[in-house]
Length: 336
Image 1 (cartoon, rainbow, N blue to C red):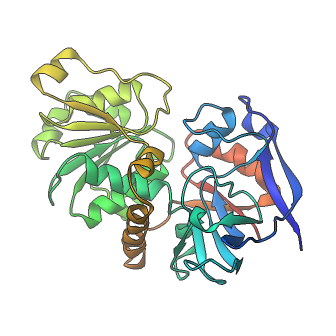
Image 2 (image 1 turned 30 degrees about the horizontal axis):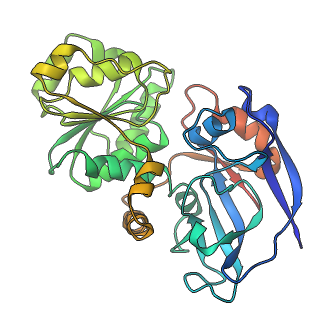
Image 3 (image 1 turned 90 degrees about the horizontal axis):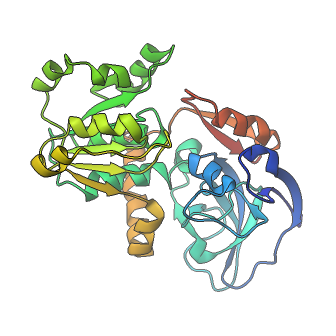
């Protein structure tokens, strides 16, 4: 079968799902260093939506196939391929691969093999959010067991990964989320993942929070995916000399730090983008990161976020669901 079903974008405008369509394309021949991959599942991440809208740091030439993350199974390999074999599971080595398709031919360097006994949803959501969470926990502060981390957007894919990886490292977490009708249900879920505390944005602003922080070591690391007032609150509770790492801007508002916080508390403001980390590190180092996370998954210390599997043909429903407020379930396109 030489046809592949792709979900692609012709041009980028605000209403993302209106400019995507399914199309049958001819499958390229497998060259000597190529790998024929049958995609199994691919999530819809905020970065995918941003890329379609044209406001992401990495934009493909259009028309393009959407999807930066996913898992597939190798069907065939070229004669000079040595790193993977038919039957192996593989994930993208970099963003922009185009995972929203039933099958494709990639270069060997474009994919990384992973254990095929991982849960499908964990494998499909491995290469973006858990990697971001792990690197932010490891690269900015020398955290020790018992140290505290505070984060907003704690129910996001990255947030859920932060909770679990932090718990595996013996770190304590304060997890901030927007208030919502099912707040208690969300709290129970995040605590089941290892969250020590779950607070709403409004609770974090209350004066009585001073008593709360008397019983907690002041956080040395804050992880910001929101910006605006939410990030200001994270900064307010950081320990002197602490670091806030921004990796997203859901509120579409700037990060504002007071002069006194910078001078008298010596707080550090940093940014993190996984694509830049990959540029600054070797493929072998990224492979090592992936295998570290696979180990956490195998030991039951890292699970996939709450997911809803949607057939590729129903992509419009999945895209619309992924852009709704207060959605705690990640949409995963299945290709079978």
